[in-house]
Image 1 (spheres, helix red, strand yellow):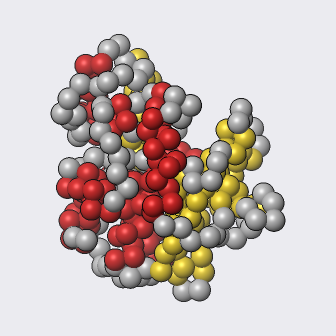
Image 2: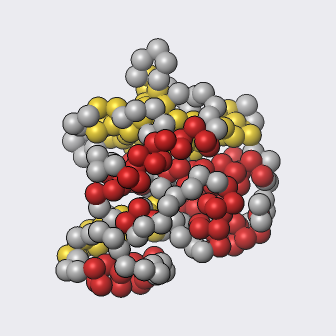
Length: 258
């Protein structure tokens, strides 16, 4: 892996070591510079879970991706610079279907100075911008909200975020079992091809900013800055692609399929 190219892509210029302080900075910089997006699905581009292909797309061609891609490549990078990390499988929760199947989500656990941390640069506004201490029932807070990890059952943990009403909403459950990238192939294919997948239904591109987040969907550009939210309705495909270029510096080479 070209470490220098990766660091340039995420605008990281500080000392590179395997301390928690560095891990926190890398985790934050990744989210400031690389968007979560599902554009390949809507523009007829197959997503291949291969580290070289992911590096080419995300680092060389300056695209983003979804969890299998972003966390998949972030794992490879962290391992390459000396961090002790493992991929883990998550099961995203929604109010209709409950917890999704195994391998629905890919995230990372890093072991630093004898302590485990949950990393995720691909879960959007439902995950903090910094790693979460992997400990139970301890409320952890950053500028994006309040979080905690609890037991779901004997085998699974679950990350939760507090909503405005003070309720704790599950994001995804997970185990700490190490996984291979290939283990996620079938679910990655599902999310690319199935009409039941959230990712296949609407285009999405979202990125963290120093004071909030920018999110672009088929119908809306949403800019959150210091708690203030501005929504702009998207009228057609051309306007979507104009905002995609202006806000995310992404220009797709061919028309969207849907």
